[in-house]
Amino acid sequence: MYKITRPRAFLLLGCAFLIHMTLLDRAGLFGSKPDLVFSLVVFFSLFANRRLAIEAGVLSGLLKDIFSSGRFGLHLVILSSVAAVLNKIAPRLYRESKFAQGVSTAAAYILASGAYRAFASFEGLSLSSGMGWIIPDAVYTTVVSVLIFQGLMEYFRVADRLLL
Image (tube, rainbow, N blue to C red):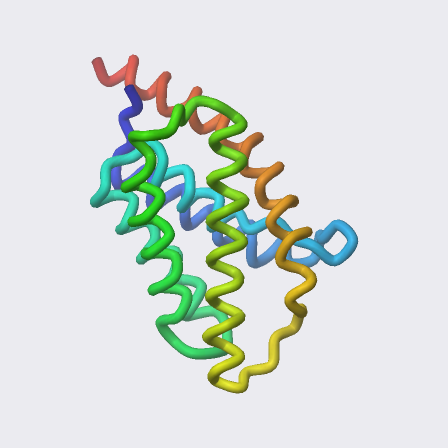
């Protein structure tokens, strides 16, 4: 059982967003960068209740929309949709499995990036990275996510024991 509270979740999202926008924006591996905000949306979708998962998707999408160019609201719709869909299928997964976490993160990232690029191409927006970067970014985000998930699972288990 995991006890994930709203203040902790939003604080983690805010910190991940700051790290993502400052440090990781410059530290890529062969042009690929992990998306910490997306990783946390997936984590909350797998381990939190439905309302908190969708709220995390909305908040992170809103943050990304505010600080990026392009169609306002597109990140919000895509990330909240990812949160809702993953949270719906999460009870059918063995969530503690690294394999299930990795497959969920990779599939969600590929679908979300593809949807974002498809909507952006309809708008005629130029994208800084082409379609070829979706898979390397997905792999990098998946590896980082699985490592982060282990620490977050332990943190929220400990928090659950302390609250009892």
